[in-house]
Length: 69
Image (tube, rainbow, N blue to C red; front, side, top):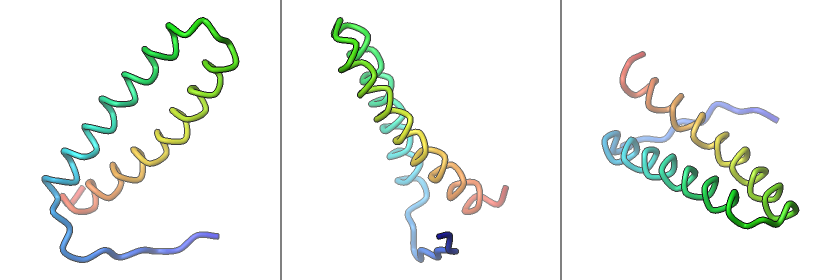
């Protein structure tokens, strides 16, 4: 299912900071996963990162729209 979503009164600078924070956290997760030595744990973390990258893409689209790109 897909839908158009309208969110009013978004604090665009705050949304950008939150997106940047999420990207920073994702890098930390990738780094931590590489140190575990547990292949199963590493694969689990990779799936989490892939899923959260989808949210980053959504935030990027929202920011592009809000900033007129």
